[in-house]
Image (cartoon, rainbow, N blue to C red; front, side):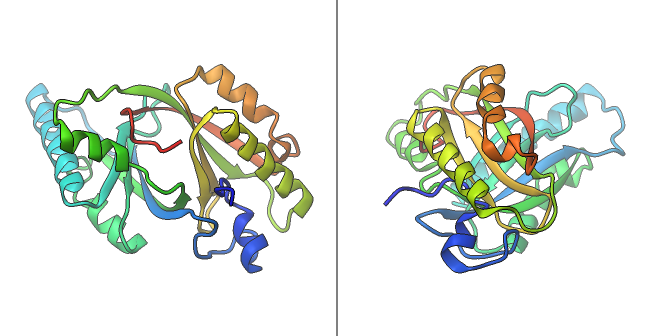
Length: 238
């Protein structure tokens, strides 16, 4: 059985749900919760000491969440303009639990970042190999690399032609088969955000060329918001 990649249409075909409705993960996908940390508009300048204190606490919290088994991935964004500070990917039992955990991060508690959290049906195994290798050898290099992180946003309301969505799914599956992707999956709520596609560590211009040829992007069903995401080696499963 092929692993499902996007995602927006999977539940429609498998469970008869409305296009943007909520449903359980299908075809081997795993339910994660992605928390976007966005710069708080009310931020004020910090002293060097306070900035270092908050960053140290932030990193300690990341390690604690990983040790507690609730965080499977995290990393900063390297964009200009700086609209997202970074993300947490949680593997917990509910959206509410993910929000509760994210709210305790020092950058959020200290009003440096705000959060918004989404249910994401991504590929199984995110973080598994990373944690296996680091358990065997804590000195395993992090190997941080920038990945094009692509947010598919709904550009059209209402029903969309099923054949077009199937063409979109086939196109994303081909990107995966061609070794272009590290992860992809639908966002399972009724928000504007419809799906996430994470490329391997390729040039952003190349990622944009690839998604420009997506049939649903060409047709104006989705628009794409591009970000540069730092992720460690062995975290993403594809």
